[in-house]
Image (cartoon, rainbow, N blue to C red; front, side, top):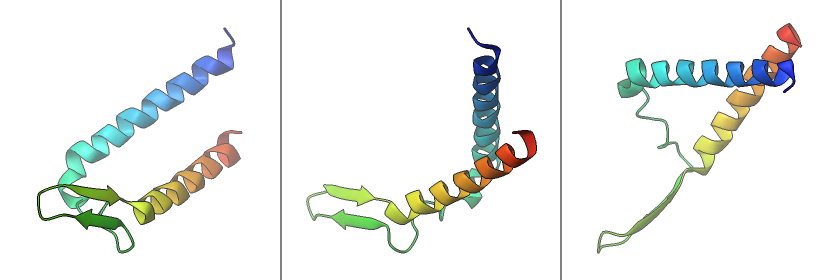
Length: 76
């Protein structure tokens, strides 16, 4: 196995630990995430429903792209 694959696996693991720590310690302050204006929510009277957080997905995607671009710039 290539050593760079090991580095990538290590970075992904560290990122997951960091994200987990943020959710664990600041989860009560992240209640707005998933409830942004533009997220689609359809609920029926009998309890069923459909939820698609499209704006949340776009915001998370933009943030991840910025973070990855910074990582590539400083470590690439």
